[in-house]
Length: 117
Length: 113
Image 1 (cartoon, rainbow over the protein chains, first blue to last red):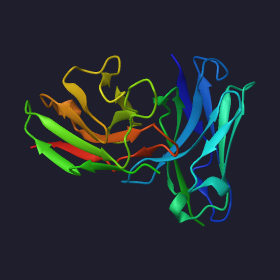
Image 2 (tube, chains in turn orange, yellow; image 1 turned 180 degrees about the horizontal axis):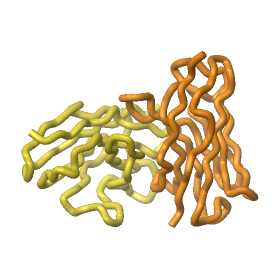
Image 3 (cartoon, rainbow over the protein chains, first blue to last red; image 1 turned 90 degrees about the vertical axis):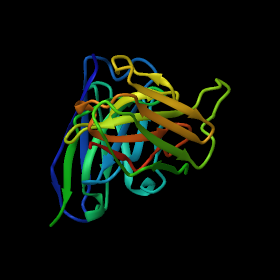
Image 4 (cartoon, each protein chain N blue to C red; image 1 turned 30 degrees about the vertical axis):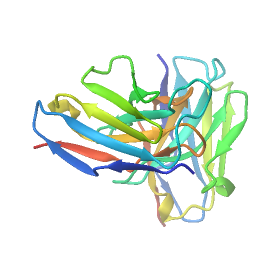
């Protein structure tokens, strides 16, 4: 069965770029009709949709983050990635990657990213 | 954006009793000609990712106990746990996947009384 695993730095300095990767195992990122999605959750708070990439390359971003977000996909590595630039303390959160057909059914365990100098 | 509002924010129920969570959307979630509501429920336990319980408002995900039932229509939906078990202690989120940006309710924390 498909499994997802986030990786990347746990600490990012303010104004820098947060970069995370989600590795997909147990299935090909290119097969099926899936969107590969990023969600985040500040400590003790709710879930926020960041954006997603379709396996054919089209993207959709939350307008609240649109100008700072880039999601890309590397089929050769069976991975997809998130870049969020110009980060502030408000971007401190647990970041989840997820697979979505109509909706998110498989999630990674999440990675905690702290923005601090 | 479609706003999702859950009530209550927290709920304490005795073991074996019923727990009901409400979710209201700012727009109808009947979003296509398939006559289905684009509404899901997730369960999240501490330190874990959300787990999908219910989709299309009332379809139970494979492996989810039948004490979990989703219902509702239009803009008003419910998640009912018919007989609360200790392992059901968690935060529950409703989620609309009708239109982007996908949005979630603020969460309802379910505890044992």
